[in-house]
Amino acid sequence: MPVFEFSHTGQFVATLAAIVVAAYFFARVEVEIEGDAGWAANLPTWRIEEHPLLDIFWGGRALTGYHAWMFSFIGVIFHFPLAFMGRWSLQLEARALGAVMLFWIVEDWLWFVVNPAFGWRRFKRELVPWHKRWFAGAPVDYWMFGVVSALLFWYGY
Figure 1 (cartoon, one colour):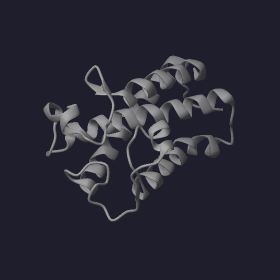
Figure 2 (spheres, rainbow, N blue to C red; figure 1 turned 30 degrees about the horizontal axis):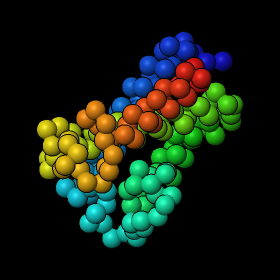
Figure 3 (cartoon, rainbow, N blue to C red; figure 1 turned 90 degrees about the horizontal axis):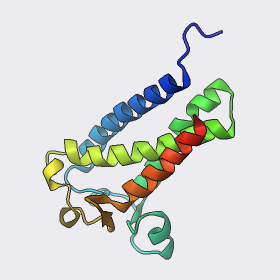
Figure 4 (cartoon, rainbow, N blue to C red; figure 1 turned 180 degrees about the vertical axis):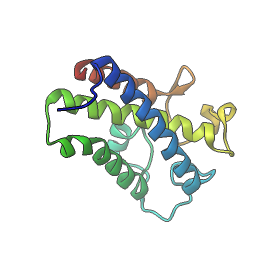
């Protein structure tokens, strides 16, 4: 029996806070790894620059070995609590997937904010060539995955 348990609202708020903290730390790690060259431009990793599926699933960006492994790693980490607790349901899966999507939006934005080579003021379409499509001052991915994440959280909580 748990000694302390959050309400659903408390769980949601704690989840959001944990996502922001994790995204901040991961953004700092990525700045240390990538420096001013975003999307693994200067890393010794394989790259697939063009493929029709990249436009559909990857926002037109290159698929790199670095990103393939990092995205997989984060997906596993966000599912780890389900394995640890030995519980799974569609609602818990929705929470995990919503959290992964929100994590990548926040982490990507924080990469620009905490990166000395960029900062908030340089977060612009013309200075960020690896984000191909923008809407209302942000990459389209942020808007699309933000909506999907919100719907998953709505279902999950």
